[in-house]
Image (cartoon, rainbow, N blue to C red; front, side):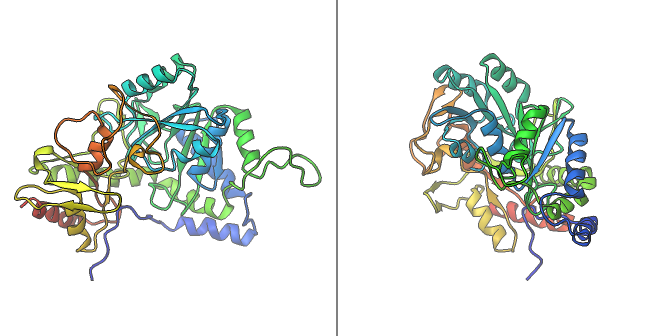
Length: 406
């Protein structure tokens, strides 16, 4: 069998092993050490924030950001709907109620108009969590301005967008509190890990304390508030430290992949995940395609399976995924929106037109819909975007996609 083509696997360079070996040889294997100090300083310099706290995951960073925002049991928290559930779950950890905000089509991210609709119904909401989907920034200035008008704290989930810019400013700096991820499939990886980012010294110190079980400054283990085992290890920080010099290289490789897909698929009834080229530069973490409505064959999705009918000149995400998988090539559906997930199906959901709810999880596209996230899920597919994918391998992916529309 030919070499597997992955969606997005770690791209290692060798320096990572040097820093890991240093941690081993100096016996700094736990949650303190030179690697942790270095990555916090380097990320601050790259992103342009004052403080960074290295944590075990990006989810941990989001959780502590939600906690810092003061979310309490029963509080509504306005949150991006089209995302991985790690964005939403930390709200529930603190007892908050996720209020899900639909996407807009220009970036696939949180729709400012839908956010305003949600504030009209939940004027008491004091926290907003916005995601930069697949490495593309949301309309961050607009969203931050809405939050300011309503006196709400903005948390930016930049887990997927490290290195991307909005109006020349790095993502991960637009919220009062911000989070990035170094998960194994991210553009910079530690195999795991994440980071809390911000400009408030007291907040960063609080996160640092909470992440080490809230130990007090006493000669014994003194605990006066709830804490968590969330600190990044010095070994994982060594991997991140070795990766960081290659961020711009990884972004350039990802952009080349995106542009080749855009050119290679231009004769098909599909488009690529969009961005506003005049004001933002994504990190192109994942290249995604969206099948035009007239190019989508008939399909229906249940909770775990999809049924579709093959039609000449048309295709659907599942058919393409199956054709790629048959050639040992990984792909993945667009994130299933949170308001279609069984765990969050009964949560409030807002589109640009107001409060909305999909009729059924077995979503079928029958024309223009106000439920943008459900529409993107129905017609979208994440394509192999691995840095190590050769041009010939990408051409093979493009050929398989063409054959699905034959």
